[in-house]
Image 1 (cartoon, helix red, strand yellow):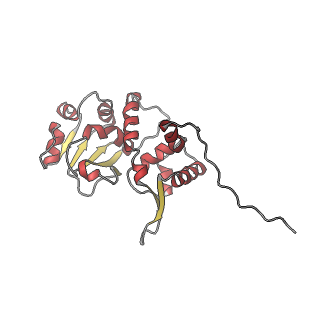
Image 2 (cartoon, rainbow, N blue to C red):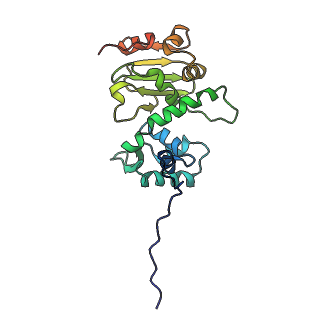
Image 3 (cartoon, rainbow, N blue to C red):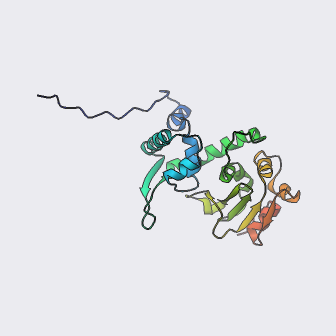
Length: 226
């Protein structure tokens, strides 16, 4: 009589096995590519194919494995969009969105290394969103800033408009409250903290489009009254 097959045990994720908050965090997000997947999902739900396209260098097997780990760890969920889209997307949970300040701090720490683009470097416009976030802190409640670069466009939600949802998004905004027009070098200057946004505007490195209170705040560096 054949032996009854035992159910397969779930694979145990690698762990540092240290009673330390930093080690526990790295158990969840320390694998290669995981934090960059979080970076992509901070802009909102994304299909697997879109994630793969904006993570050049990751293999399909590794991406699928990291997404599964993120689901099991409570960082992301997979759901199906209603018709007519009817596509499966991945999005961050509240726990996953809690990594925003971690990635913002990491981007601030790494900004000095953006001295020049190497020939092998891929680039996406929205990758500059994280380094730019500190320059826009406290400018408005619920404002949407569209950022236009030679490499493409993205938009950032500031103040209350960013609470509980995507902080930045791909492509142009539907109805931005203001627009920033700059090149990658000006963006790196802001990211490295070499100039404030108001100083960059005054020096002609950044152009501000729009007539509302948020546009005025971007020009002066002050918070508009709301």
